[in-house]
Length: 87
Image 1: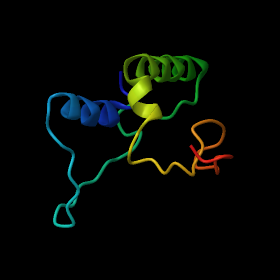
Image 2: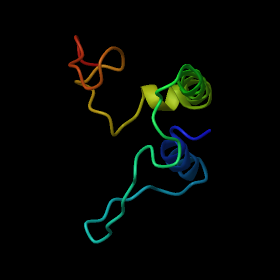
Image 3: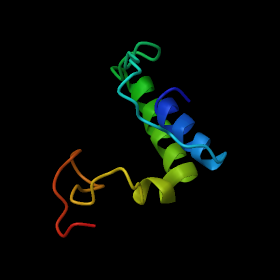
Image 4: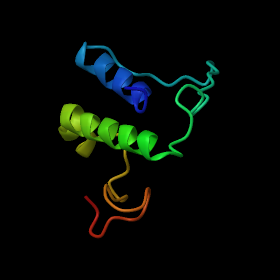
């Protein structure tokens, strides 16, 4: 799985008993789509849908209850739309 590998990594860190911390003193770069390219063919789109499903199967409950995701934002529809009512 290529898509969501950063999210999966952070969630596995939590399961192992560690924490994900933010610091203003570190500077990291994540080159989105550099390794997988864009989902610009039917094959890549199918692969991406499969990876979405695998993330939901493995981490669905955790993702729905993500303490870092604003409860005023929806989990369905367009990203970052307002949730009515808030979660």
